[in-house]
Image (cartoon, rainbow, N blue to C red; front, side, top):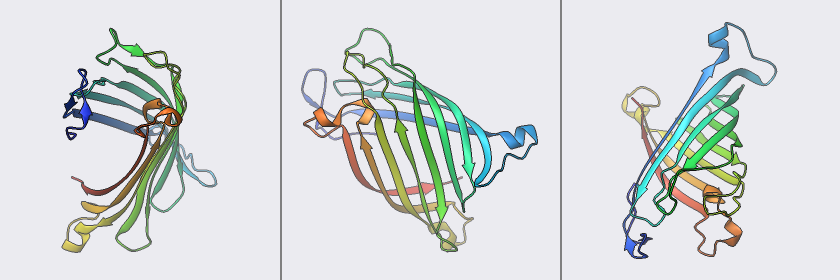
Length: 208
């Protein structure tokens, strides 16, 4: 990602920041590994999710070097498409430019929902995720962090199916993200408004 020149660098000057953010999640299906049926009532199956986040940003004052490990159980609900609910533990650290060493936040839980719900037989789907993240103690500067709400949802059109491509190969649609207390910062005390994101987007996906 590349920002405009409205970012402030460590000298307080306007600068363009560059950021690379890698996120990976994988859910191991318990039924597949054990040969047992974990379906019950509204539950289709169960699994265990692991993953990580890795972030590197330069050109701004903070210069994030976030690292985070994620692990916890997942329940797969019996709906058209999919709806997964996970209770994950997060182990997060950061090494910003203003801090002499890598700082480790308090391990903290996250309730995570992920879904992809089709609109009947139409080539449309309602996709997205919602993360409800507990506070992670104090940050590297001694400020108490806040619980976060991060919701990202999209209505996507399977464009490729209209051109004879396999289903879900190419999708385009409208997306909206709401993120309060972003990165644990207190939105109520942030006069700049940067700790709350309300972001409409156009989204395109190519699956191969």
